[in-house]
Image 1: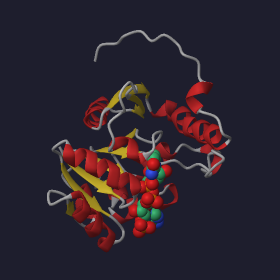
Image 2: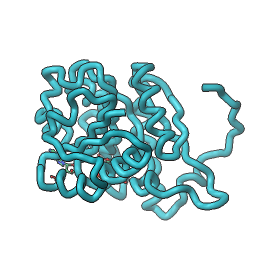
Image 3: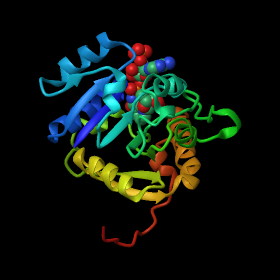
Length: 217
Ligand SMILES: NC(=O)c1ccc[n+]([C@@H]2O[C@H](COP(=O)([O-])OP(=O)(O)OC[C@H]3O[C@@H](n4cnc5c(N)ncnc54)[C@H](OP(=O)(O)O)[C@@H]3O)[C@@H](O)[C@H]2O)c1
């Protein structure tokens, strides 16, 4: 796939490495061209640094790997309101939560994915990759360690399929929770995990083990 990554930080680096290793064609666009070039160089000769606008043109998927409060600026830089991302699966991994506390910081609790859908005309927004630390995508699970499930929300089934493939390519199992009308639950889950972790509890010990029924995909 041709993948555009917006952002040059920790998550951009981890998923850029994972997807490039899986054989995808990855380009990086950041507000700082110098940082984009530095990251592309670190990821290897197949990864290119491009201007943000170029990072979204003709891509099979775009990852919006920027801080939640930088989303509007970045979408402005790429011309999202003019439809530059129309029809493109746009992955939203953002966590608009207070560090160490986990409270959602968006105005009136509006989910980030919905805000992004409102800013990026015609984009097929998929919430995914927000719950696990970035280094999960560059390290394989240890012996006896279970793989991870990446819960996702989105309204477009083709976009969910594309993002599901990208989840598998970095060792995860995709699980669709529902459409963007359920995305608030997914975003609040990050606050739940962060809140418990910072209070000294293992978040996975705070959810019951419920038998799952096998599904075919
Ligand atoms: N790191 C993780 O483990 C992890 C896991 C799950 C989800 N996430 C989410 O993924 C997103 C990226 O996280 P990260 O850890 O990669 O963050 P990071 O290392 O701090 O990088 C943030 C990126 O956002 C860019 N940015 C910030 N404000 C901007 C603005 N106004 N306009 C354009 N670009 C702007 C930064 O550009 P500059 O460098 O130029 O400032 C940088 O490229 C966040 O929303 C985070 O909540 C992260």
